[in-house]
Length: 361
Image (cartoon, rainbow, N blue to C red; front, side, top):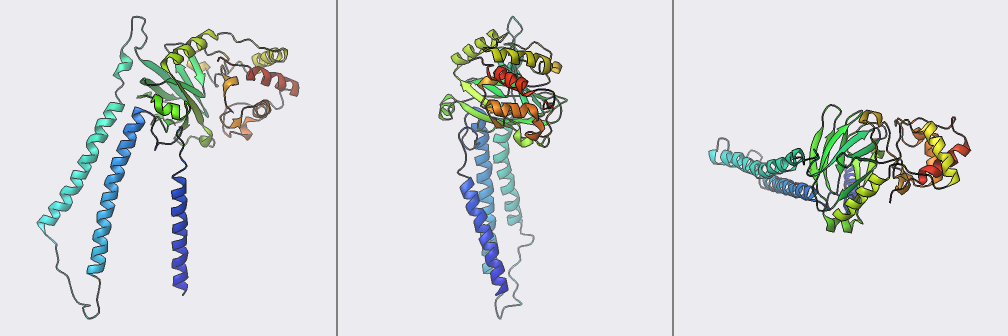
């Protein structure tokens, strides 16, 4: 009876996890799920995943069938305890079969994997320059830091943080690196992932499908896919997609935003607070000509257009003031200092008003 109860508990636990897994499998969103690919790279990776999963399922099914057949057919029977079935040791035909079949399966899997790997790693187009020394393709430099992302469009001369803007139906090439520890750049629905290292630059490309982007309201999300510290799970970024014409217009607007002006008297006071307390690390113009080493914190040019503060808090002034006062309380391990003691409530109100007014669109 005790054994039966023990088995019943195990079966119930297994059933509970099976139901939970089935429920979670339906929780994917078009802007985040790898199972709803929104670009050429993601589609190729998805098809490889289906191929490898199909091969594994076939192998498992064959092994289970053989196992169950042997278990039933050759189980010990009453009166035949000493019966020994025919031995197949040294059977050359069987040995050839179970050696050749795995080789065939590996070849079936290896050929498309190797071909796709070389295709996705082909970044020779980045080396082609025009007469001005600019790349003939769109190049984005991605830099990962604890715990934020910087996106530089080198040929356009603009820098953004936390929001990556991409044109649709166009290959975009990336230089990916890290400034402190190892990170990993990943946009699940569009493709990836690729390591962001301190000592070398990794290159690859992505392409966003306009139809899939429309289904996702032109918004995707990226993540750090390499454990990098206590706030690794909070190191996200937003990917905004638009038509190629709109992207060109966005570039022009960003280039024109060289000296953003405060729009209210309170924001003017906030600008003065910013210059005294924040300007040493942060920039407020996307036309950031400082060398990379000087860009120690996120560019705030489009801060007023964001949907999250620090990537995790609702975008409002109260949360902004809480973040400025004590950033470690919300994202442990980040490198932003606390201003709880150095800024008064009036300073925080003015600074929040100024930052919320930083918009390009």
